Amino acid sequence: MPKIEFAALKCLAETSASVTAPCRCNRVPLAAWSALPMTLELDRFEEIGVLFDDPYDEPTFAEFHPAGTRYDSDAAPIAPRFYPYNRCTVARCLDCDRHYLRYNEAGGYFTELRIRALLPELLVDVPTSARPAG
Image 1 (cartoon, rainbow, N blue to C red):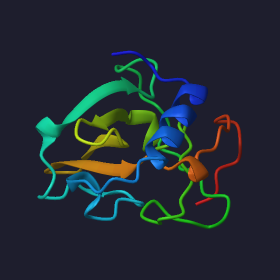
Image 2: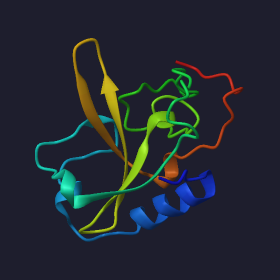
Image 3: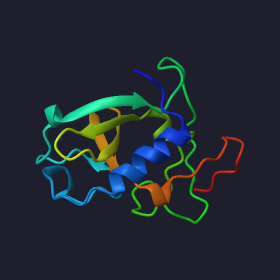
């Protein structure tokens, strides 16, 4: 699966934001990370790319929250080089063409598919050398 660079990710986010048609994929607010809602069917999404270079590499667990947001905040920045974005695939809804970020959260005894809407106003292109807050 191809890696999606920041400029292409921004275009996908802007395209997604321009979709105004109602769809099953946006019945539940997905501005923040959440568990995959029961109302979403995985077969209605197509994975189109990833945000990481090497699936066997162990990327940073540092998050990027310069304004004091948290992982579960609607306003948390989408920083592709930081956790959890550095483990994400980008998926497109086959019904409406909106784009979403997805990754598997792996806890001690479980894994859970998480999803978040790809929102252009939250995208930030910062290097991992930037001091992450939070």
